[in-house]
Amino acid sequence: MKLLQALFFPPEQPGGVSSMIPYLQDRFRPPHWEMELFSIPKRIRNKGSDQVQFHTFDWREFEESPVVQKYVQTYRDYLWWTRLRIQKNYDLIHAHHPIAGLAMKEVFPETPVIQSIHSSYERELILNGRIKENGPEHRFLTSIYKELEHKTDRLYTVSRSFREYLSPYVDYPENIGVIPNGFDEKRFKPVPHENEVAQLVTVCRLVPAKGIDILLQACAELKARGQSYVLHIIGDGPIRQELEGMAQRLGIYEDTIFYGYTLHPEEFMPFFDIFVLPSRAEAFGSVFAEAALCSLTLVGSEVGGIAEQIVSGSNGLLVPPENPVALADALEKVIVDPAYRYELARSGSDHAKNHYSLNRVVHELKKLYLQFDR
Image 1 (cartoon, helix red, strand yellow):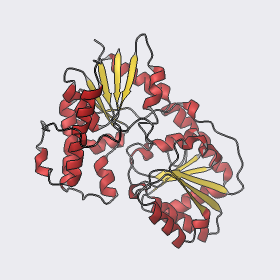
Image 2: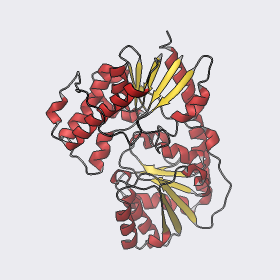
Image 3: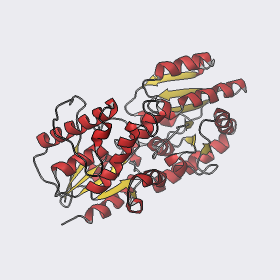
Image 4: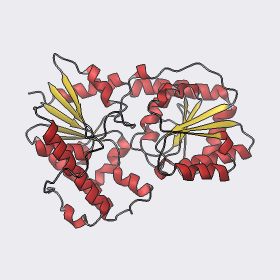
């Protein structure tokens, strides 16, 4: 069976898709399976010129928005790149971005296309202050979900909560399947260690949606209570300078290390103690599963896919979003009680291995793909 995994970003880019899809190739080998990956390079800009028409809505209602214009042009570019680069037929295409799914079905209308939706671009833009809720961009981007339902052969997402999020925007939400991301355990090697001062770590793109401002306020509260810690922030983004300034104003800059972007944070994540990320929204939150497989204690906000990964008090701690004092309370619990911290970390690691292993995902995908084997 000839399979194509259609990504948007190249697979070396950080994120949930890139943490799973490239590792699938070793599990889908000849003679029965042939799998290839496809994505559009970042350098491709303004190449496509197709007339764009969607079947379920008229996108021209929103065409005055620069965000919509950029999205449609990116779709045109993906169409152009697909026609230029793909010269063979596949038995099945699995798309991992809405633009990829729509383009693949346009170019290969007779080929079955499975669409996985891994995150919400519109929600990220709203939380990052780029667009307004119920504005033209929001309405355009949520209309894409019904178009995907209409054009592709099967819709999947990564968590039950994200399926609920998608439900108002499609006609048949009950038909959306859920396949959480999977992770190759061989990439994660827990290291026994004993840090005299608790080492906190977070890994994310530095944008408002990730709630790092809440984390900095919580850490300032910890310092006011006399708790010792070091906070390691791995990642980069448009608000890094703002966050560094905030750390200075809160008096915690000396206790905080900004690393910038790192390609493989899982290589040194095992040397920390507590993974913390108070996101304002997460469709799944792959980095929590990765941190759990590194045997770190998990502390996260009770939103989206994070709340599906963590049973608070059992394999990590959940706190309400937008609540730095509650976050400080949770962090203090695991800072002052190493035994409790280790207990949560062991339970978190076991849970991640049982629910988010790559073997489990491969088993589910093979069953799914064989339904289209002709």
